[in-house]
Every structure is written in C-alpha cells, then in structure tokens.
Image (cartoon, rainbow, N blue to C red):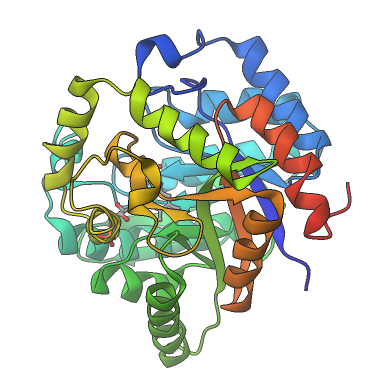
Length: 357
Ligand SMILES: Cc1cc2nc3c(=O)[nH]c(=O)nc-3n(C[C@H](O)[C@H](O)[C@H](O)COP(=O)(O)O)c2cc1C
C-alpha cells in the first residue's frame, strides 16, 4: 500500500516560530492559504496540535475552505470535556464537512492539565483515556448505551445524538502518540494509528515491535505513523547550514525554558527525544547527528516533535524509505515556514517517493 502524507498546521508559525521575531502574525487568511496549499499539493490532510489556539474553531475554518481530500487530524486531551459532548462536536463536524475528522489522542502532561482541573498522574491519565475513548468510539458509531465505569457513569448515552447520523464507519478514527508502557497498552487496545516522533531506526523498530505485539495480544493490528520535521535542501551542506542557523537564532531564554521546565515533563516520548542531545547545545548542529541525517536538535528549542531529517532531497527520501521499511505507512511532515516548506517538500521529496498529486 502507498504511504499517506500529512502536513502540519499551527497558527503561530514562521521561519523559527519559537522566537517572537521568527513568527508571522496569526491570521486566518494565511492559515486558509496554508491549508489550501497543503490540500492542492498532494497531502491528505494536516495535524493540528494542541497549542495556544484551540483546534476546533481552526479545524472547522480550514475544513470549510478545503476540498474533501483535506482531512484534519485534531489533537484532543481526554477528560477535559464530557465524552458525550466531544462526540456531539465531532459528529457535527463530520456532518457538516463530509466525514473528514480524525482524532489525535494526546495524553498531555501532569503539570499542564492541572490548569484545567485534571489532577491525574501519568499512568492514571491513560486509565482515564482508555475509558474515555472507548465511550467516544461507541458514541461516534451511533450507539446508545449505559456506561458504569471508573471515571464515568452515563445513562442513555447517545440518545440525544441519534439523528446525528455518523458519516464514518465504524467510528471516527483514533490516532495516538505516546511511548510509555501505559501509553502503548492503551494504544494497543483502543487506537487505529500509532504515531511516534522520529528516533534512530533500531530504537524505533524495538518500540514498534512492542506495539505490534501488544496489539496482537488484543487481537488487533494498527497502522504506524511518523511525525517528523524536515530540513531539506538541494545539498546536504545547505541543509546542515539551515540547521546551524536555527541554533544561532534561538535565544538563551528559549534554550533555558526548553531545557529547564520542559525537560522535567513526565512524558516518556519526550525523555527519549531528550536523550538524543542530553541538554547540550552544540556549536555545530551536525555534532548531534545520531543516525545519518537524523538530528534531535530541534527539541533544544521547539516543544513537541524535536527530531528532524536533515539533508539533500535524495538523503531525506532515503531516510523516509528506511522508516517505511520498518512498517511506517503514514508520515506527518513539517518544515518552517510551513507554507514555503510544504511547497518545497511537495515538489522534491513527495515526487521522489512516488506520490502523485
Ligand atoms: C505525533 C505526536 C503528537 C503529539 N501531539 C501532542 C499535542 O498536540 N499535545 C500534547 O499535549 N501532547 C502531544 N503529544 C504528546 C503525547 O500526547 C504524550 O503526552 C507524550 O508522548 C507522553 O506520553 P508517553 O509518556 O506515553 O510518551 C504528541 C505525541 C506524539 C508522538
């Protein structure tokens, strides 16, 4: 089966959006232009991560101005709103936009979720998540049922949604990113697409094997997706020079923030990424190359996925093929600025991988 390629959309973006001077003004017209480009360039949609701006208004605006091919992948924290209300919002979205929604199930961090009143430690959040998403799946499949669980007690759930006929079968699909044992267990039991940030292939292989094994124990098979940033240029020297520039334009305050509070986050995925550089800011980006063309340096300054594939078109293409050979069939790519790099990747890497627009 041919791989699927998604891009990334976030309101605060630009050449190096982690710094105020590297960021474009937040503007709906620009975001629609970006989504329109992504739609036309051969991507099948875009990931909208949790950030300052909420994903629902943004996802709705972008779905309204793109073709049915553009499928938004909206990141949602379980437990912040009632599962019935989430199902209602999602079924409304699918009814209005023709069944294009995909959920990205995120576990978040203990510290950040306290602000929302959710006081649960890492593994407890996954226990909540498993129950929450099992309910959302049934509701977005159009079921009506009673539920008596550990975190939720619902009566006649779905009765008021009966006329919101689901567009997608068997339910609105769940994508997911998390690397801890509790996360992998939850994914094995509940989700459809297992996502991971990029890691050296031998480490990734071990992790994917574990996920496959746990899914098989539940009688399930998952798809695998890679979320990775690309720094692709005509030559590898130019690509590494672009990575060097990112290190140079980053402020001391950003490094301190990212390597201080952020480094103490409880996510295992984050810790695996941090291990790629150990908190050291090098003089030259390439000092951190942990596998050919694989650079964990973005996590020195950027929250979320902090590993980039850096190189010429041929090298980047080879690396993505290497991940494909491990069973990855879905790629969520990004490059800064998102608009210009969507064009560059679509005009260089995607054709080399055989993607036809
Ligand atoms: C592809 C991918 C996308 C993610 N997107 C988000 C996000 O939008 N918001 C968020 O709070 N966490 C996001 N995360 C973090 C995960 O939800 C999770 O909190 C983190 O990986 C820690 O879980 P773990 O300890 O099981 O690894 C993402 C992770 C991955 C792999």
